[in-house]
Image (cartoon, rainbow, N blue to C red; front, side, top):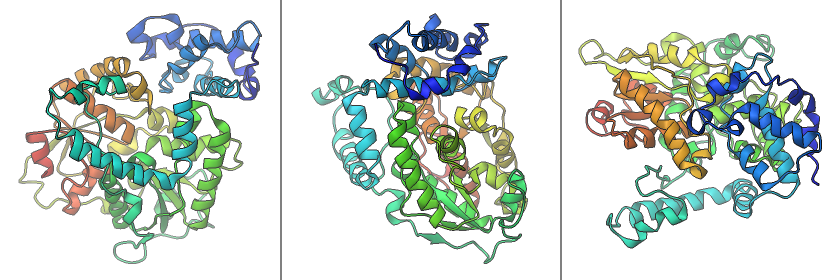
Length: 463
């Protein structure tokens, strides 16, 4: 019989804190669709306790149940005992990897392609060519298109296009601040570590941690982030040795490989000698801020304050937000905001993106019902569980429809990817963009990000 694994054994006491009250069932987006006990946190923790007590082996069925989780953290927040279910699920997956339950294809992708980051741009260019030249040119009735579901790609699904050129391929190593030296003092010595607002205001230099999805799929968003940071008064460093943050590897339970990712990024970001690190990916931000230290045992994490892009911009001088001289004459864009799980529940960042959006004079902000409900993306979850992810996404589509907006803005490339498919499947004429894309409109860069909508939504962005 396989043991529970080192990581799960270390967290044994957390599993015992669950009193099976069932609060998790009311908030779990997966349970809301499948209505089985093992879909909710309570059921999963029962299975985990059975493994810890030696009454259950790390079987294929256990593996299947543990993988069926979005890591949205809604159950953790709803738990009266604050049981860290998310950590227990990841620890259980780590035990499965230790026991040899690590699929070959996943192992190759995570340990070879992601770890050897230099392989990603060539793969992205090849994928971009296939998408633009081969797939796009195939008739809808083509036999090759009929084979897409065999490869795990649903024919009607809206997939992101790989960029012909990754952002890091041509990005400058340093982009100087607009207007010369930035206002404020230096961070070290400076504000206390827990005074994040003061740290953001005082920063003169920032390292931009790009993230795999933004680098390969949404380089326009990356350029918008750099431009916005420059205009906020900081010099932007783009470390060349940065790699994947390690989130997909951690989510798969391969903590050993994830530690190698972490060590590489700690060195790359530390060598940049900057005041802060900024990222526009909620998952990257959470991993850099917390998971390196709390899950991987990297003492002190990266050792530099890490900010989400919207969080950082909200704490800077309000004059850095672009003004639209025609805002009084032009009709405002109706915009709503979707909260990424890794940003709102993972990092506690909820109001800062709304603050940034509310400061844009051409925006009419509309609050969406259940804005913090998971969209169903869950990183790679939607790739392996598309039908379930789509069912979860339909609830989000209903909320977007009720809001009556032209744009949905979020702060996570995985959410952008999922939401673009969600609105397309629902037949909504709504574009989905990142916060930085919308901010960049005020710099005369309309449409700097990739926009998925058609008609009035894209006309607003000038695309």
